Picture 1 (tube, rainbow, N blue to C red):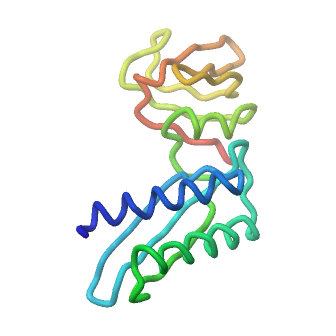
Picture 2 (picture 1 turned 180 degrees about the horizontal axis):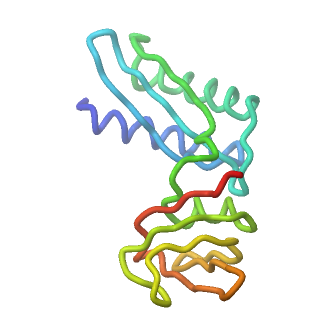
Length: 153
């Protein structure tokens, strides 16, 4: 199995296990070296706020299935953690977690004349999101989003 196939297989297992625990799998990172395979999973709750117990439960469940079905030689390490507060917001699922919080977004195309917006994220759908500033609300389609960040004070 090549590295990309292995990553997809692990991600599929992890997504199913995460869903069973009420979590979203945010990212799967995998690297292969002569010492084995290093797997990093990042999970969060749909509304944000994953706990150490959540990560531990997901780790145990994914580890068991990977060992039984994918890498029975045991030459791998598995880490599960929170994606962190300062990571990029990439789409609907990420934005949904931070509704009601301040965000900073950079756009590929101007919205109301600006390509950078900072304000409260007040609404999110699968197609767009709304940022509220002191002066106005701006409805921004996800298709023009280059990068988004939660503003951490």
